[in-house]
Every structure is written in C-alpha cells, then in structure tokens.
Length: 294
Image 1 (cartoon, rainbow, N blue to C red):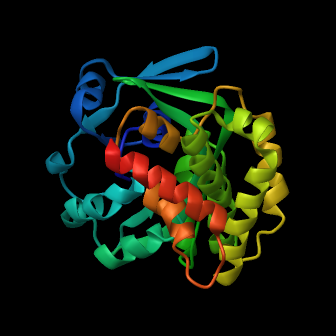
Image 2 (cartoon, helix red, strand yellow):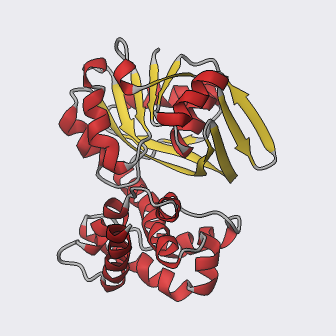
C-alpha cells in the first residue's frame, strides 16, 4: 500500500515519521527549508524528554509519482483545496483520502475536488515545527479520529494507525466527533491568539470568558444538528491540565506573522447566521485587524 502524507508540520510530520518508523511505504510532501533538511538528515521527533529520528521519503507535491492508495492531508485548512488539486492526478476512485486540517467541512472540500473515497477526520495532538527538520510534540495527547459510510476505507486507514502503534478512533457519528474536536480548538485558538498567551494561562485568567465562547460554538453546532453541550465543561477540563507552555497553532502563526486559520476557526463561528455569537465576533474582528496590519 502506497501512503502519502501531505504537509509535514506538527501533525503530518509526526504521523509520517511514525509511519516510516513502522516500515510503512509512506511519502511525505512538504516544502522549503523544512523539507530540504528532512531530505538530507531525516526527520527528528522530540516528545517531552524522548527524541528519535527516522529517514523519510520526502518530496514537493510537484514531484508526486504514480497512484497513492491512502492520502492524509495534514495541511492548514486554507491550503487544503490547492493541495487536493495538486495531487488529483495521483489519486483515483479506489484511493482513500481524508483531511486532518482544522475545521468541520474539510471532507466536503475533498469530495468536491476528487473522485476518491473520502473520509472525514480530525486529530488530537499538541505539536509544531521547532526548527527545520524537527517536530516537537508536547504531552501525551494523540488520537486520530476518522470515519464515514465506506467501512472498508475506514478499516484500511485504521490498519495503518494500528501498524504504526498510534491511537485512533472510528466513531459511528463522525460529524459529532468533528464538532467535539472543533469546539476546543476554535475556542482556544481564538483566545490564545487574542490574549497572546498559552492555553492553560488563558483558562486560569479568563475562565468565564472561555466558557462563554465554548457555549457560543456549541450553539452553532446545535444549529447544524449536533448536540455537544457536554463538551463545554470537558474542554475547560482539558485546558486546565495541559502543559503550561502549550498553545494553539493559530497563536503561533500570529506570533510569527504567518498566514493563519482565522477564517475556519474564528470567522466560521463569528459569521454564522441565525446564531448569536457576540464574543466570537468581537475576538474575530480584533484578530482580523491585527492580521490585516501584519
């Protein structure tokens, strides 16, 4: 089975390295200095006090060859459409594709630009590129969540994570599972970027505001037919237990003046018609102003 992981950042880099370590035939697609270092020296994974490295077959998307049986898109949400189109000639009707990008509508994007078997997915992980060729993973958190109507496709992807020894879940209601991931990351990506502070500090200093924002996101989910009210308190509990320096990738992007997932994580909620989201609207407008000035 030929596997492609598109995007070698905190999520894709960790998954691709874990697959390669397990002997899976995986190709990682990246770009820039990060890709060049991986091609030369392999990819290094730093997990708390442990460090390991592995050689990874890594290329640019334009260098893709043949047909891939499974493709995991681990790019930022704003790059998903372009990445799918770039790989379109290398996936067919039998290929299984899914996105681990942040958001709740990535499966729809893949279905619109490919003829492949599409699954919906999300991943729980705290990781980022520490420097070119090095992925830093913080804490013990990792779980890949994916599902869809094609049970054979689900089993094929599950077999890969099983072989790599990576935790995964295949919930019957994947839409609900996506919203359960989304409520946490949308709230704390917005708040960490707004306050320029890590997740746990935001929780400790702005707990009631965090709760209010989580409730707004839950209200939008309910409008979409998904009841995740119980996730409000669960999300607060998770935030309270994270390493003190753990933050969101969107916060890191704001700090580094990079393009961010502001639209998919904050704007998606702030712009939802028919649901009152005054707090997210305030945060979104403030962050949009910062983004436009950078």
